[in-house]
Length: 95
Image (cartoon, rainbow, N blue to C red):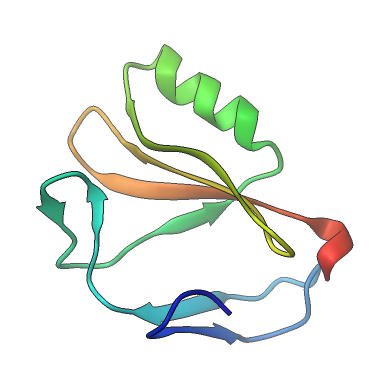
C-alpha cells in the first residue's frame, strides 16, 4: 500500500489493539526539513478535533488533512517545541 518504496507492517487485526508500522524513504514532513529520525503517527478518533486543538495551542499544521482512500485521513503537524508528528483517523469501514 502506498507509493513506491513504501511498505506497511500490520501486527494485528483492525479494531484490536495493535501496532501498524511503515518503512519508507526519508522525506520532508515540513518543507526544507528532511526527517532523519522516528516518524510518529498517532491514531485519533477525530482528526478535525486534533487539528483544531493544534491550532488553538499555537502548533503548526505542516500538511493539511489528506484522505488516503481505503485507510483514513491524515495530517502532519509541528508542536511548539518543533517536534513533527502525524495524526491519523482510520476509516473503520475499510477494515
